Image 1 (tube, rainbow over the protein chains, first blue to last red):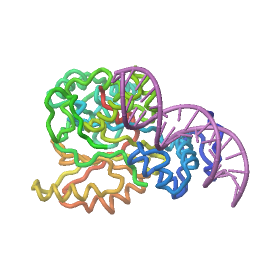
Image 2: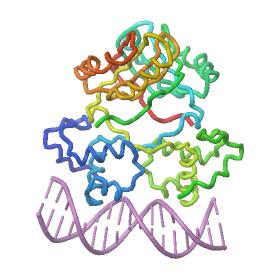
Image 3: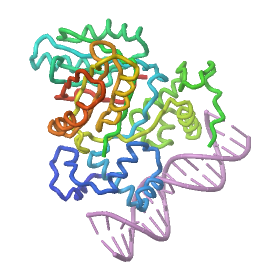
Image 4: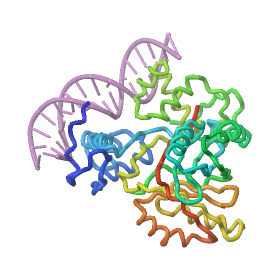
Length: 173
Length: 173
DNA sequence: CTTGAAATACTACTACG
DNA sequence: CGTAGTAGTATTTCAAG
């Protein structure tokens, strides 16, 4: 249960960073590729896919977790089914660009219900947020009750998503 | 292995849609909440958490999958560790607003390497894309080699993400 | 340092009450 | 929905490359 083994990287690894990436074998990449697509697969089936024995495969998966390469394995739900069928992209401009202003906004933004993403960006906006709500009515409520009360906001522009063309959690490997 | 049971909804369900949502019990919500956070939990542990016997819990989970409420369970990887540490929000304006123009763009956009999200939006942009790359250099390459060749594009504005404040796959339940 | 084979412990899954 | 039983899996131990 302890994490006292971390020999693998072979290339010297930084301390706090998850992993320098470097050259993961073809097998590790195959494992990640599979788990990114479907992590409900049993270990024996995964082992067969990557042509490895079950214990060896399990060890690699656990090492990938310890190394922080696999952050979590989660269930992805259907947005409509859980009352979050509407997606809105929100561009935010702050009043002033001081550390306090940014900190206050970020703290508050994380509490906005349905906020999936929030990022500091370059360009004409200070932040982009992605927020999920049930429908336009509930977004209006969110807009009036929460977004307009975010601290230090000069302008907030909402881009309602009409159609989701692509939405994935899989990185190219 | 067959999906011939779907009595639960009690409210008449539509055919093609995943689920009308309706009133899922406190237990189903607890299950979803947990699996959204960590789906690597064993069924017995999950059953204990929601105060149910293991078989009953498993039946619920499988029903939630059959109903399409749980779309998939996947591993979330560390972006930096897999060479996708940079995130860029991209606003796209098309030349003309014809069905063919939109279709061509959408088809091409899905093939952009590292494209995580692509959505049709209202407002001054036609699309918002979220693209992941290794660093600013590789983004420049992507920009020159792929983005500028997307069909029917009048303007494309890139907002580089300086800091990711929040990024989650969990919907509020 | 990693792998594979065998043994154990635990879990998923089925049938039934 | 719960209990009990079976089948299969995860996980450890250990020997070998």
